[in-house]
Each structure stands twice: as structure tokens, then as C-alpha cells.
Length: 125
Image (cartoon, rainbow, N blue to C red; front, top):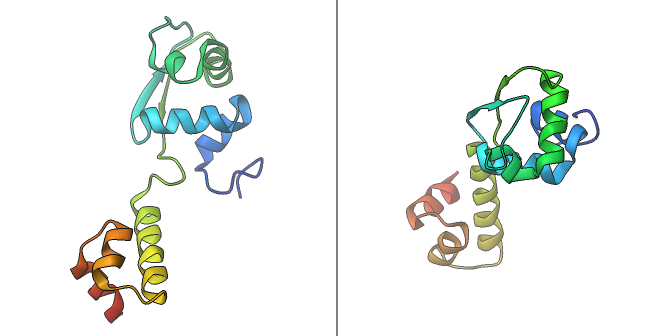
């Protein structure tokens, strides 16, 4: 479990959520998840962070990570649903649910956004 009860967030996003709130942390993950980013001590209005979460929150993060006096580099993790494994689990759950309802393999594939062949492979397990 992460610091303030953000169980689905990687540690860095949980820390960001502690500083600027969960909505801002998720906005950052959506904008730059999986990328290296720079958080400068001063930001123009068109800086990606200001556009994503607003000037006040962007400056709060700058102060938190760089004491507001230096530029910091961060590797922004993917958000709670942005990982390959999470997506795979979600699709597998959709297939299980569809098949439990008695749908066809075609319908299960449509609901999960995968191929019919993948549904058959999952059924074989």
C-alpha cells in the first residue's frame, strides 16, 4: 500500500497525489506516463505541466521535488490502468464474464477488444 491509501498507484504517482491531489496525479500520468520529464523551477504558461494541472499545482510539485530552486528529472510511471499487465488482466476478466453469461467466442472477443482466437486460447487454459 502506498502512503495515503493510493493502492493502485506506483510510489511516485502516490507521492504526487499527496502533494497535488489524485486528479492531478492521474492527469500527469495520462499526459506523460512512461516518459522522462523535466520539472523546472520556473514554468511558462505553455509548459506541459502547467497545461496538465494548472500553475499553482505545477509550482507546488516544483517546490516539492526541487525545492523550487532547481530543475528535476522524473520518470513518470504509467497510471493505475496503464500497464500492460493490468490491461491483460482486465481483458481476461471481460472474457471470463462474457463466457460465464453464455455468449459466443465472437461476442466475448468483441467485449474484450481481442481476437476470437485469443478467447479460445483463454478457454483452453
